[in-house]
Image 1 (cartoon, rainbow, N blue to C red):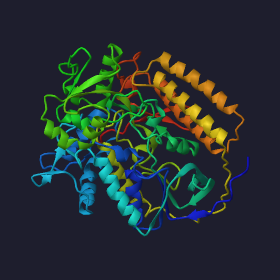
Image 2: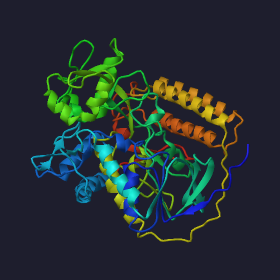
Image 3: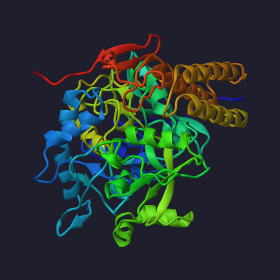
Image 4: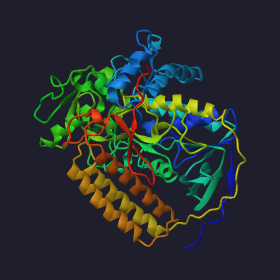
Amino acid sequence: MELSPSPELLTFDYLVAGSGLAGLSVALRAARYGRVAIVTKSWVRESNSYYAQGGIAAVTDQGDSPEEHRADTLQAGRGLCDWSAVDVLVHEAPERIQELIASGMHFDQTDGLLALGLEGGHHRRRILHAGGDATGALVTSFLAKKVAEHPNIEIFENHIVLELLMRSHACWGFASWNMPQGREQLFVARHTFLTIGGTSAIYARSTNPNTTLGDGVAIAWRAGCPIQDFEFIQFHPTALYSQESNAFLISEAVRGEGAHLYNARGERFMAGKYPLAELEPRDVVARAIAHEIDGGDAPYVWLDLRHLDPQHILNRFPTIARHCSEVGYDLTQRIPVAPAAHYMVGGVHTNLYGQTNVPNLYVCGELASTGIMGANRLASNSLIECLVFGHRAVEQTRVVSKLPLPTEFTPHFTFSLEARAFYHKVRHEVAELLARGVGIVRTAESLATASKALKTLEKEVAAAGIPSGEVYHHLSENLLIVARLLVEGATYRTESRGGHYRADYPEASPEFVYHTVQQQGQPISKKPVEAKPL
């Protein structure tokens, strides 16, 4: 095995890893102040932002208020939201939306006014959408076009970001693997942004693109960043059931328009048991569906729309209706759905300006744990978080001190086909052990079994005889890091709250109103939740 050819060392003012909404919005803002490189595994279509159907939550109606948006966010977060972060989000969201509209983005309208949707956990209609159920695709495509046309932005596709370039505990860029050229490439800058999404595709059944495997979590953890609240994985309640691992998302907005859930016995099992019925927050609905599936004869429940106006449904959800038709279902009737891993609620801890504890390193989007999401993300807060905190992070770079830029970095990664095949084996085994042990419902027994299986797999990877600098061996280790963080976080929190449900500890406990923190070389620890200021 030979070292890859020496790469061209590329220097920019800003580096952005990832091309979802967070990365695109950061790049456009940063391009006002310098040269920007976007480095991405694949372009816009392979991001959670692109596939977001529901919309963007922001106060735009006179009958609504930031205070009400904040109250809904805090309620969904189950006591773990940091007050100041939520306050920033709800008050700055309207301005970010107005900027987007002023730049030419068109959201759906009714009679000349923004058409606002309702989703689970929201008590008012405040969800902006575009193309009915194609909000993520249209917003990211809109920004991607502006990025592609901007003279200050250069795009590097088909690059796998591998590790941060560190000197004196500060970040100066990252090493990547240039897949088309089969070589390592180094990117150096004073400001580095990780916006490479979440981790839910690490599970066997997920709504995410298959590139969303938690690489950003592992990269940041290796560099010494704290990982916060990682036990909270949000399982979307309604993904179209199929026997494939990839699950097509059926937006929460479908239930917002009045769709009902029925079990195999024909019972509407949410009504009468929960105050908001099908519009309860996602963790509640996902567990209720999982319970019906476990106690029933089918691996799915029915999402029923037969009582709704079919033409309205087809107009409101053209993308979902088209996909359902392609696989043999009629959205205006009823479709089989089951939960799937969807959103990483925790992530890399940042402050209110996207800054990590590593100088020069910023994290935005789903990868970041800003304190907004708490134990459970409120529907459609994710896209607006990208815009609000991406904007704040870029502006923060304008006030930090600028140190001399080091350039003495050298490549050290290699590649082999054998290691790539081994990586896919590891990925499959990690997905299965997490699905069995760290799914919607967890127990001490299931977590211990998952931990034991993970230790066996870790030994197998260590004994594989592949050098640690090989690209796919490195990525295999990333999978193990992410899986270990999930198992240990879920084991540590002996209560049920939000996206973390322990059947052996089914109630929320006041002793667990804190953030969990995992950091390399340190035992898992607690951090107080920031309360409302007096």
